Image (cartoon, rainbow, N blue to C red):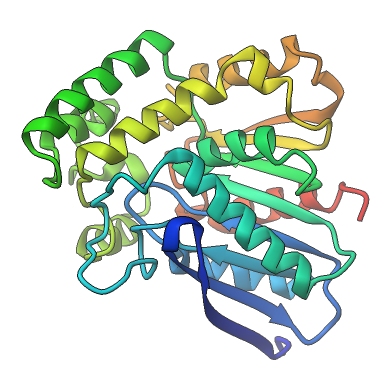
Amino acid sequence: MLEEKKITKVYLKGKEGSNIFVSSYQSKSESKAVIHILHGMAEYGDRYEDFANFLTNNNYAVYVHDHRKHGKSITLNQKVGIFDEKDTWDNILEDVEIVNKYIRSKEENKKIIIFGHSMGSFITRSYIQKYNNSVDGAVLSGTGYANPLTCRSAIVLGEIIKIIKKNSRSKFLDDLTLGSLNKTIENPRTNCDWLSRDEREVDKYIKDELCGYRYSSKFYIEFYKGIASSIKDKNICKTKHMPILFISGEKDPVGQLTSGVKKVFNKYISNGYKDDLSLKFIEGARHEIINEINNQEVYETLLNWINTIDI
């Protein structure tokens, strides 16, 4: 019989007045440590509920928040994905720190492991550079590498499009960012097959109005600024020496079928983080490893790594 869990939903006030929706999951037993989940692009935190329940069954508390302008982190008259001048990469990081402080107020003296998936992994990489004493370990799921020139070009194009169509969703920038990902899939059934081999999960994503949308140009400008900043050696060196797991699907196009993940991993190695890092690829898996056909195996792999951290 599974232990009864306590699930709490709250709103916090984020940077520059943003609303930040936070879900927390607790088992009745005393939790060993805390997992703070950062979701990816064009999705939201509640998609991680099954994984959160798995972790609470193993005596970890879990907190997951919707990034600003995602999921339920919107205010009246706002729409998901439509970023304005207040929605900067730095403010996204500030929101994470606000949630981190909230966690620490609720979970005194417990270690915090941050788990970032996809866009959340890029946010995590920036966050542990800027707030390098806020967490005790990090999981970078579905991360990737982008050439600095590509980032600069995308930022310039975004700025031009923002002048013309300030608050409109940008098909051009969406195609630039995600358009090539499904080309890695042979005979795709949908435009989102790159996410997972599990057709049910792909269909759920497509049908969910809080998933798969395009963003305004401001989002893409900030996104590429964040990626460009996170890969700089001088910023990587700001990261505290702590356990960091790079984990991706072997067939994840965001990680360039492992080559992009290895590039980022080796960047950390060259900056002196050899003894702190682990690298794991899930055989045959695509982008959303926790929504794959072998997700229970992935859960166990993640749990085994988390259990190695001195808590």
